[in-house]
Length: 370
Length: 114
Image (cartoon, rainbow over all chains, first blue to last red; front, side, top):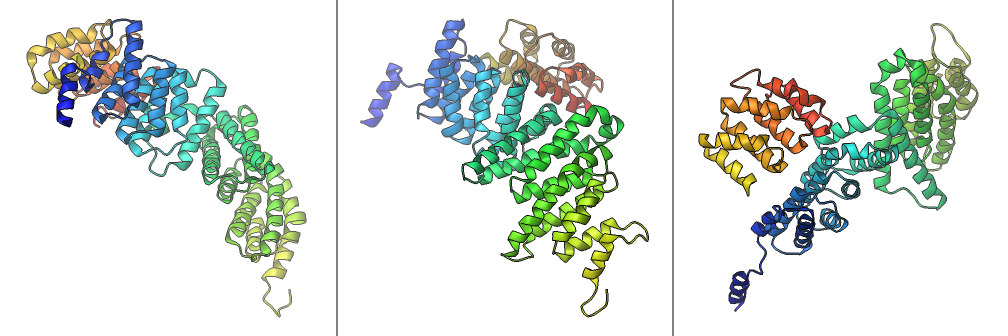
């Protein structure tokens, strides 16, 4: 009975086949193309045979009609429904459109869990929108923000096109803006009494990494033309140090590590020296709280060790860190490992300064005279 | 569909298809995915006369990115026979489309050995 019904449907032409979808591509003019696209969009979202849905997605990519209904159908399947192959095809079809609507749909997918094949097609589709996304600064920053979220939360290796997009979109200025927005979101959440989600923390880490790694890559340029870089360097350092305060230990460690490495450049060390000792003092306060849980809390200890190392490296180029070390940090620090590191960093030939005297007390074995 | 027909002709290795495919690939009023499919087919067939046609399309102003990507792929198939073939796609390294430019840069740098 069921077979007879199917046969009847076939004979009357009511069953849609992949070939029907391919034929839609040959629509002769614009109105016909719009109708054809809407028909393909209907088939795409209908829970029918996968071959027909794949053919519908392919037809939509070939027709390239940018219509809210059509883009909505592709977006819906890309975000929520279907096999990875079908979702990848939807990403491809959206990529072929190269329009603002399709860019928005692709951007939305960056906040979802994407299988490797889907992620690869989404990245390629985004790359096809390069001209659209770089039309204005706001769109570019927004897209990079989503890319950062994607990179921070994608478990598999990032598609090669991700690096291509990064290289062409992530200037230092854009990266600063993206990290600032991440910080604003964290502050907003804190004020509302909620914590950052694991995904948001990963995005913060990714944003900080992209900013500071890009600064690192440009070391030679910063040294060669410090005046041209001053504004960008100051903004990067300020935003980086602000990001330490949002309380994600991994991001804080990463930022401290990079600021320490960048401290070899005077143009970076000076603005960092104005801000970082305060953060180190903040870490000291944090340490006292940690003492209740145990003075050797690995995160707090690691954080202070790296911060101490970074601050000590800045001493060569700025006075602020040294004063902060002597007057503020040392009087509050109780962890011998951190103090020893500061001492090792601060030695200058045979000079024995106040710091060395304090360390002498700590280093002296019990029972011996300092 | 003509797109699939071009692929089928290349798979069949039909030399008599070279001339019609060359005509399709240069036709600006043809749909870009059909032209792209014809370009790939010409690359697979590897007729010496087609390299000049493909080189011309590579420098065509306003050519769609899908076609240019297919041309890069097709031209690189000639590299084993003609070591200068890769020069035909060198201008595409400056293409405004990110994927086309990156693909051309990679192929030119590696002399199509990918």
